[in-house]
Image 1 (cartoon, rainbow, N blue to C red):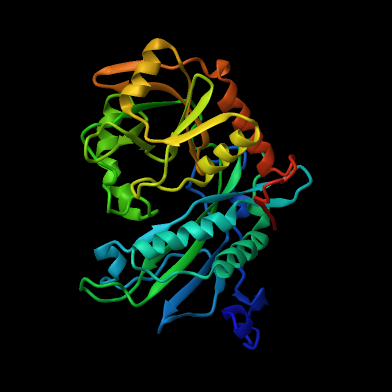
Image 2 (image 1 turned 90 degrees about the horizontal axis):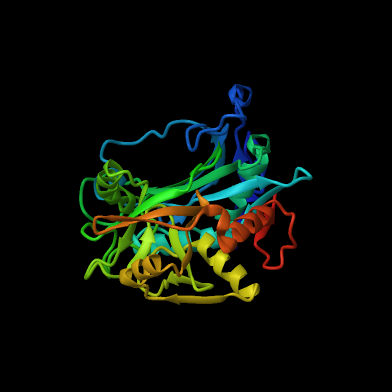
Length: 368
């Protein structure tokens, strides 16, 4: 019997939808939002989904008014870093229907991160049903303007009130949502990093762990001082192979071939947006190569004019064209954005796909 089937027998004073206990806010903040000027990640919707893990089991799922978390000073996530998250988006179709893009893949990747971080895994049905119920409740928070979406942040933290190094015995899983505009409004200038390391083999680079992003802040700050918006990370051993960009996976087009670092190593996060790009490219008949990509190969292609396109692929940015690449004291300018056939085509196609304007041949969409 699933946790949701068991909860059908429970009786709550609050509303129960999909076996989730819901306490609605009495003071919606929706009227305070300027939907014509949405920053990224600073405005949050009225409600949040929560479920706690204790005594070896997931407890009653709830949706409550958006609020601060009450944490013990010894909460183990604060001291030992057991914290993971996901990111995905909801968009509104032209008919007003709300659509989620590849949410099941996010649920699967979330559990892969949990396993690597020695955290409790979450049944996919809780992830997906909690997400759908929360979005349905706050459906008026999904923006309608071009380029906007509802950004969704599921996360989990260890919550033992214990100062000692061991896996926590308690966890809290939360989903919060935020109406957002574009993450990158302009093409991105990136630098190939050859000293600092995002992840080493045997480490936690494959997991979407909070600490991975914390460790990237200092080298990203140094790059920003040189005028770069993001880093392209290289392998920890030799710094001669491309891995991924700061907030996204990276894709190149050389001589009409789509090239990207393969995800067989445990140093690269499995990108859901990148996977969508590659699946579509193969479906369209493009030659696609997932393999080791040497830094020298990219620099040579820049020098001889065979690098036609380069972009980042990620949930927040979706498709972020790269305008310049810095390496070894030199900055190389890429072809104009307007001249790029593939990234412009894939960006437009994924945008229309997420809105339900294209046949869902891959069964990527969930309707709320």
